[in-house]
Length: 490
View 1: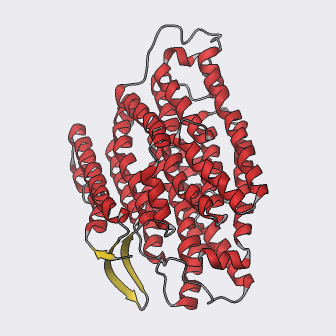
View 2: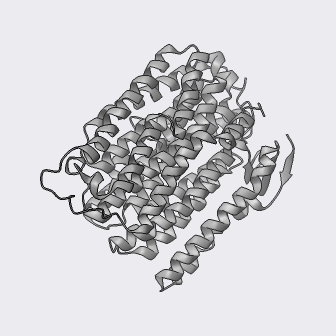
View 3: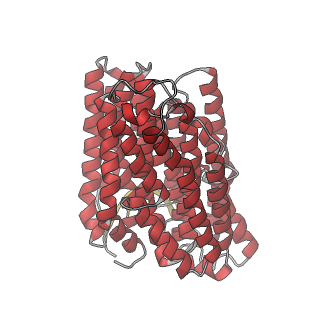
């Protein structure tokens, strides 16, 4: 695997960071939004320019500074990082367009602040995706935590501030309390924090107890993954504007947590060590509990965004479960699910925001018959629901199919049952929404006056994401090839 030194990973991180002074100083909303698109487009093109090299089996590196022996701040773009980088940079363009329709449609205040911190959050996300080691990942992880805090508390009311405090307590508290000490222990044992194929710990730790403690510190420390019991911040964060919720769930925050756990399992501990000690089973059971309990709680939620939030708590643990199987197909499914879930879930959140902009309705019980007024939005919702459930013809079927095969390959029948039961629960909390929207009469005749969709800036991005969710079923090759390269199968 040849390493190529390039400044492009740094430029991908800086492209949205450098535009924030322009966003702050701009008094004209059209100029501000135009620069947002410029930064998003530049970031995506830089990431895309590195894709051919990664598909050819190369790794792109960019070292910034040595901190102390064996530890530096730098970037390393490999196949796994490219999956996350492609997803986050492409969806930022679509989310930026959606944000214009949503923020203008509801006449939200503080739009300059919103777009500035949105740009900072995407810089941090790309920084995590392309981190060369645990220290760099940790620094960008914390940057993301503080950049998204003003987005969570955007409405500046008491509920938003209370939710913001909970958000920081869980996210920053767990990372300082768990991840930072775990990093120090790893460095003391190995003399390095670099992500290495096969892991760096190897035979450095002889105590199974120490290994188990280290694993738990990392899994629970990356609380952005919303693994139970460190999940309560996510439903509370739904007080944020819908584009922020979409960012939290599909593009950045919780994906960063799941991605970080995946990095640690594969590149710090290594599959062979975990298989030899059977500690991967502990991770599997934590993820399985989160998957089932999250789905059960989602069933009881009437507010649409909260139902989607608990769905995300469940869905992100699919990534953790898939990689913890340590079978080739399970890991491939886990990596592909980063992308497949992103496009399906962001479609659902865009639909929720479109409904709020067009009708002011936020509760599922009030959406009977809404499909007659918003057929395109609810049609997109149906596609997003199919993807999250894992049904064809959507990309969600592809990643879940690989995880199902992974359970058989790992001889984990109990985890196969978890995946199948959770998919049934997914169907139970999504499909009735679609049925009621299109086939149930509206008692108050609120939706009988013809088609009246959300503004085009909200509707078009929603439809684009729904179409992409379908296309990923037929053309999953990029993410499949990158996943196989991450396993050395390319």
